[in-house]
Length: 218
Image 1 (cartoon, rainbow, N blue to C red):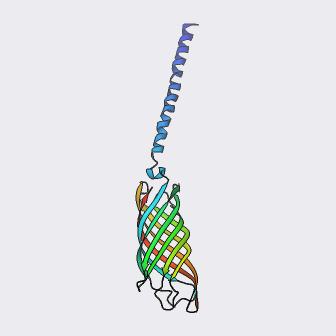
Image 2 (cartoon, one colour):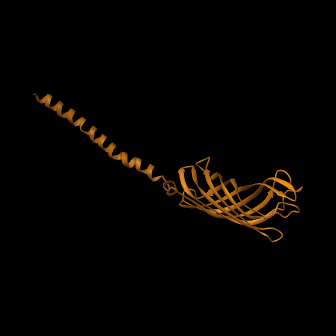
Image 3 (cartoon, helix red, strand yellow):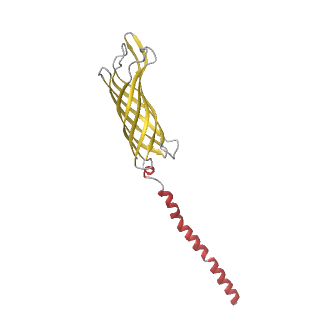
């Protein structure tokens, strides 16, 4: 081989050598490039826990479809209640769990009312970019001594009933393991039909309207 041919071969080899080296550098850089994407997941995103514990100020009142006194089955009563939810995160924007709400109250006559809701509940955030959420659930309401402050109203009721709830709120610190939320909700206990004084009170419902605050743990 001539000196000219050897020089041309060496030049070509020198030109080709950096190509695999560059490819190797690019390949070695790929994991580090993808690493920040994994690091963007927050502690709340990595956790599947969903726990809510809080309290509310609650207004409650019984009513029915037919047979009740002209102004419903009693006065509006005001009390406090406690709420707890335990569940799991099923997607970045949705949670599901079990809710327990306990509402202790007293009528104007001093009679105690105790209502406990045990509900399967779900929560959904329509927009992943903020803390607004919608929550709803269904299950059982355990009602003890539900007494109305009205003449000729239904007698005190101790019963199991269909329980429903729906509400909305805003969670603060949603990317942290421990956050805070404000919410409003309505709970309902469908007590059914009752006869009082020869009058059939149809579809008696206990309504509970609440505004509350809670700690959120993820």
